[in-house]
Length: 393
Image (cartoon, rainbow, N blue to C red; front, side, top):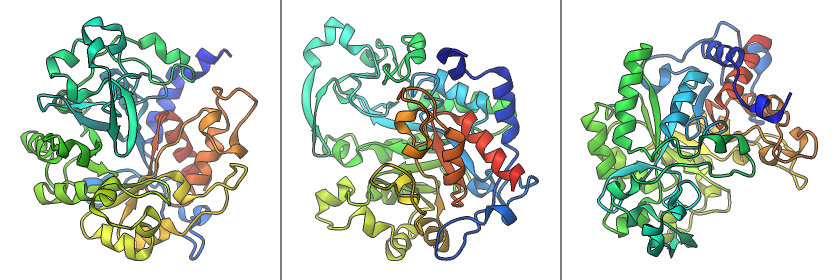
């Protein structure tokens, strides 16, 4: 099998992934260890959660990270559509603003690596160096372009050295606005006969507010326009800055998720406000209780769920899953990818960093902790791993 064949989801894979969406998993934990009692708590008959809104989603929930970014250039309608075709339960969008205040879907406001902007001589003078959340970056930035100008660019693969097959799709799609995605989700929902769930992140909200381009009010306005502002609406709102989720909680009732990076890091809004707390403080029972006062979940890095040792191998799970569940919070950790370079050392296979490793093995370890969902660049792989957990338990 060639590398290209391996990474293109075949019809059988798509059908298998779609079938996996009917399977779920318990989140019961062994006290003190954070390890799920998968063997006696999971059944192949488990399907969806309970009630309406996010509690009705299958558990574990598979979130298409920037769409199906393992197979298509991220944050394009092609990537989002493929993620749905593969069976993802929720599709992620990252939002940044244009100069004239439109919300567009890009992982970062620096579009150097994700568009063909460098090939446009008319924008050569826009290349600049900026400091974003304390980091100096040189490139082209969405806030320096009007939407009309941004629409003259074409999206491309962000990491072509790792995902060479994805470069086949360079130039096929433009940068989508969030409003285009909302309309697309409505159309897909009618066509597929089910709600299309979105997982929407505000990127660098403190930075953009300092430019007069506050994200939360613009996002809330569009959510209300499309009826996704209610507590049971098919949308999650997420941010690495807790104050952004607090602000959104005052504007809409849609469930908020606080994203959590490395244990020693500090959210940028904390840095700006002089708040000395780190992520390590936020994942304590006290910190989780504070988050639960305004959010419905957390999105921790996978290392906060199962740390790696000095060799990069997975260690023992922390108590984060148990502690978060005790406060009524769901957990949607990020991000699982199939390539060796992204996998824990004990699940890498061979010496090629771009080749796939034992993705199912690593997913099994993470899902057994009782997490409620996972962000995945390869949604079909995550869905099949979730199915394995249900049928083998």
